[in-house]
Length: 251
Image (tube, rainbow, N blue to C red; front, side):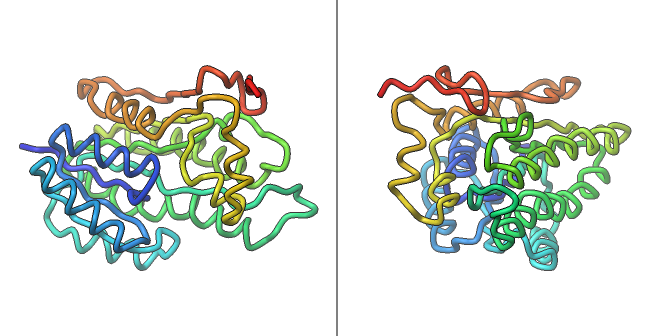
């Protein structure tokens, strides 16, 4: 029986790379995001390319009622794996100069959104006595860097929640993992800088960052280990990055 995986934030970046790799490996998919047209295009491409079932659900992960409605719409389909990938950074400021709208966007997406979807899916896994929840964290959940205060706080929360979820669900046979990447070239910096392409490009100049496919490879590895094995935490950095703030750039 083919396993099914639900991927949040699947319309681009790491989420899209995961959808493509899991489809290639014959998992059925439930892909979610806010960009309906993109999701439908991805659904069509994956179905044609890999002959797997793909369900596309467009909703805002920050909307608790929309999350619950989306999960309820899945019906009797099993969710073997939940990849909590949806997340973002918005702004780069000191706390005293911070934009509260940016703060709320990050807290609502990275923390509350992850909680909403996990709260909806975990009881389904518990009822079956099996399942795997994989949270996409960040090196920002291990360290704090200048002007990254609230984003780092949300990713520290993901780190803590992953540990807490593992404690809460271990008795039910649920596996809970976290993957914490360093610099990955996606739309991340473009979103952080509110669409300023020049600023976003500058982040990745002078070194080779991680690619979304690198993280997808790690997610598939974590998901593919034997049932008695759980990868608790996996930190992945580009070779040129020693920690959150130290990068070797060849300019």
